[in-house]
Image 1 (cartoon, rainbow, N blue to C red):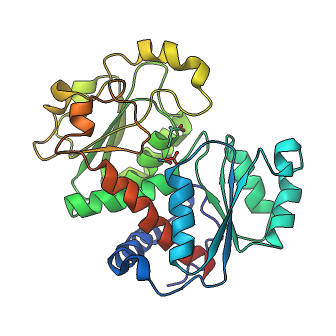
Image 2 (cartoon, rainbow, N blue to C red; image 1 turned 120 degrees about the horizontal axis):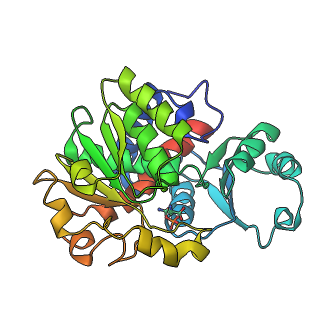
Length: 308
Ligand code: CP
Ligand code: NVA
C-alpha cells in the first residue's frame, strides 16, 4: 500500500497507528527477503545531510538504498554550503531538483520542518534534539520480534528525557504499549510531548507516565531501555550530568525488578559503566545488536513507502 497522505517522516506524531503497523509489517517482509530484495528503488537517489555524527543511521540508510537498487549521497554540513549559511529553504529547493528523498540529522526540529515545507521531495528526520523517529520504528520492530505483541506490554525507559525518550513515548502510545519514563528531576521529557503521548495512550487503552523512582518505574516491565546521559550537542554538560544521573544506571539490582524475561534495549552508541553496566548490555537479556540491525529493515520499509 502506497502512503497517500504522508510526504515526509518528521515525527511519529504525524503517523497513525495503522500507518506505523503498515511500516512494521513491510519491514518484517523486507527483512525476510534479506539483501536480495527486488530493486524497488531502482534509479532513486537519497541525499543524507549530517550536522551530527552517526554510524548506524548513515550506514543503514546507505545500505538500505543500495540493497533496494538505489543510491545514497552523504552530505556533511562541513562540506555543503548550508554549513556556511546557505538558507535551509534554498537548499531544499535545489536538492529537490536532484534527489528523490532527503534524510537529515540536525539540531532543531524546525530545520527538518523547513526543509520539508520548502522542498518537493520527502524529508526524513534522522535525529533532532527533539525526536528520533527512525530509531523508534526499529525499536518497535524489535519489541514485536521478541515480545510478539504490544498490547499489555510495558516499556520502561530510564535516563534523560531526550529525543529518544520523546519518540519512544509517542511510538509506544500509538501502538498501545505502556511506557514509563524514569528520569532525575529537571531531566524530564518536554511537557507538551508527555501530554500528547498520554492522550494518545488513553485512546489506545494504555498508559504513559513519568516518574523519578527507578525501582517503581521498572516494576513489571517487559522492556528496559536506556540512552546516553549526554546527547550530541551536550558534551559540555557531560560531567555534571554524570553526577545528576547517579542512581539511574541499568544494573543487576535494577533489572531484578523487571519481569524475569525482560529485554534490554539501547539505541547505541553506549557508555558502559555509565548508563548501563557491561554485564547487562553484554548479557543474555540484551537485544541491542538486533535492534541496531533492525534500523536497516525498518528504514527500507520507510524508504519504499515514501519513494514508491
Ligand atoms: N542509534 C543511532 O542513531 O546511532 P548513530 O548515531 O550511530 O546513527
Ligand atoms: N540521545 C542521543 C541518541 C544518539 C543516537 C543523542 O541525541 O546523541
